[in-house]
Length: 92
Image 1 (cartoon, rainbow, N blue to C red):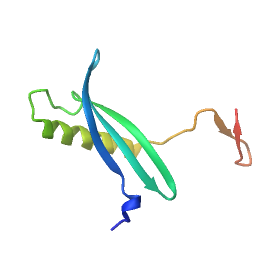
Image 2 (image 1 turned 120 degrees about the vertical axis):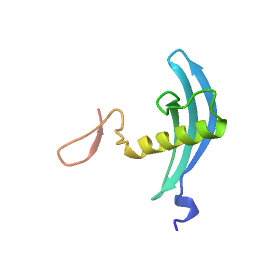
Image 3 (image 1 turned 60 degrees about the vertical axis):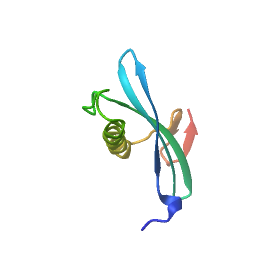
């Protein structure tokens, strides 16, 4: 089992209504390999195939499952940083 310091915590924040639809919002915090990170995820409830008539528990479970799956697939790129031919980061 992983050390608690290396486990990620996904916390439900709220549900918001926007022009584009309704979203379940989550906050992710974690520590891995000496790096601490936080992220916010908003999951479209239509994409999770849940509606306002469903129980809050079902909405949270389905949206969290989709949000975590997509978050794990992400590849991140630092804005404004490029690598030169020797692999040294430069501000660009």
